[in-house]
Image (cartoon, rainbow, N blue to C red):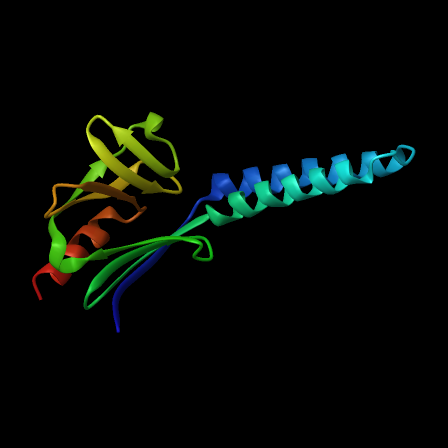
Length: 155
């Protein structure tokens, strides 16, 4: 049973993904207009690289945060990149604002040392674990997420 679930969509990442897809489509169309090259393996390599870049971009277009009886879980896109936090290991949760230079995606920040999971905006909830590790989870509804974590920590 899930007591909290929210998905934040990274609209800028969607626009970037569509722009990159358009660029790759244009490259493929213009490449086919040229005479066939001697090395057809190069075309395959370019197509594979394009597919990999699109796969990565699509993976970071949304961040779903959910809480059940035991875990706080986050997953990007369709779930290739995910993380689980045991609720019993969380010491605190508080709303924070990320600096613009923290970026989006999965980030390691060294001062202070923390892992950041974010797809859009600067709002986040910072959780501190019993082992003193700090994580920031981006969300467009930080008050709801903070309250849900605190409620789940103290049932």
